[in-house]
Length: 142
Image: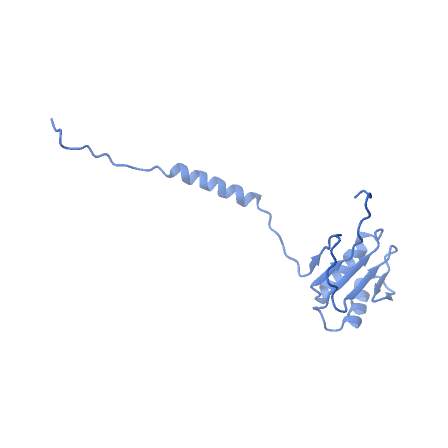
């Protein structure tokens, strides 16, 4: 009988189940992740609030009427295609593509007209675009 000798068992941690759980979590996160594509044009959507931000110095204003007519700094663009709009914007803005652009569209303007204006600005290299909004009146439904 060996009373003084201690029995030594090899202690082992089974990590296979831990690896399985970690791989399952990794696959879950990869499959549910949304991949965002950043476009060349940065669109800043201003929120209607009571605080007023400091206005940009001499912004380029592109207005779109309800009838899809384009105006670049209060000058009407006669032909509503992208190339004519790009020429009108280039004449007014010149080579200053870091200039702030404010896009003012009527609430009833077709979505295609707004996309055409944004496309023309993006093709010319403008990166700072703000879409003008009006503050909603109290009691109006959204």
